[in-house]
Length: 402
Ligand SMILES: Cc1cc2nc3c(=O)[nH]c(=O)nc-3n(C[C@H](O)[C@H](O)[C@H](O)COP(=O)(O)OP(=O)(O)OC[C@H]3O[C@@H](n4cnc5c(N)ncnc54)[C@H](O)[C@@H]3O)c2cc1C
Image (cartoon, rainbow, N blue to C red; front, side, top):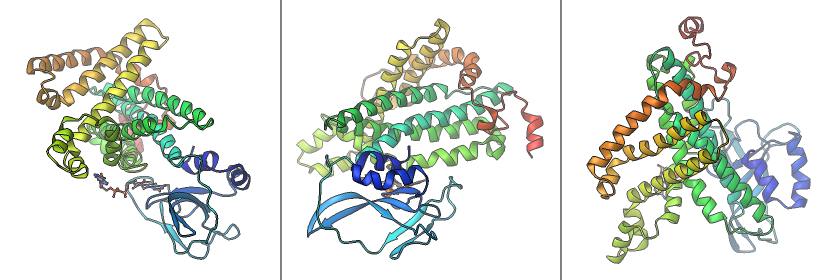
């Protein structure tokens, strides 16, 4: 569901919905969500939900969402006082008209009715971030399918554990979000801080892993990974921008750090030494980001471990899923071994054992890799990759493609 539709469905009064919802569902009006500098206002949209400061009768009520008509419903020209257009070529999304928008006047509005909760406008962002973890799982599924099938024609590679982890974790977040939405119907917003914190961090964690993962998979496909025939350039263009939109990743991880940093030794030491809160926070950004990433990794690991243990499936399937969970856990330790050694949590010998076990697990996963990606059953038409063709008939079709 788009942010625009979500905002109309969950943040408007019944009276407002009567005016906007049906024309929106009938595609009579096309809307976008304009909160930061870019919105999809370039060519198509007629309306936008604009995030702006509300000042009425001399009082500043902070940032609110405004429904604004941008273009005429008769001839699609911009309304008076509205300047907008397409931002031009960019890294990905060639088919999307990301645009610029300037409003140079505001209609005066008299009375003010506060929303039922001051953070209600967060809901659309939380909902989209929840879905993004699932999205990143599907991005990696496509990339792994291409690289793994192509590797079966040549050599092997593994990012399968991460994609399955994100798909399971995304499902869990979606369930948490649905239960929060049903609580809000009774006016209970108490779950919002925890949900905001977990979705913000996991959005950053999943999008960065997906971006890095697609690059690793592309490189693993050698020279042909550069060709559009592989679909990797298009996948990268589609998934990498997710590190910036819906909240830039560093900023998102710092949101999670606010929840998980209580008792952080680095912060406490600076505060005890007389440093101001803001300076201590600023000076410890790197530690806080590492802590936030570790928290997200643990959240994903806990979630997939429970999901696999509760899964109803054949023993052989459960065995390979358990191997993937172990691989995901150990891979996280090896990747962050510096932190584990520095904190004294693991010794050099223990890290060495973990690395060896990781290599042992690779030998178990490798023979199952093609079956694991095939289990997602992505049709060739949808995958759109010559390298990742189901029939493995790569080279002949690369010639045809060229
Ligand atoms: C493809 C795409 C589609 C988009 N679609 C929309 C849309 O439909 N509607 C919409 O409203 N917006 C949209 N955006 C805009 C997007 O939401 C913003 O780009 C994003 O939130 C980041 O904000 P920014 O660009 O101002 O970056 P900044 O916040 O300026 O970030 C720049 C750098 O500063 C760092 N930084 C910023 N604050 C801090 C801090 N407090 N501490 C430490 N470091 C910090 C960041 O980590 C980053 O490295 C879209 C963006 C993209 C790329």
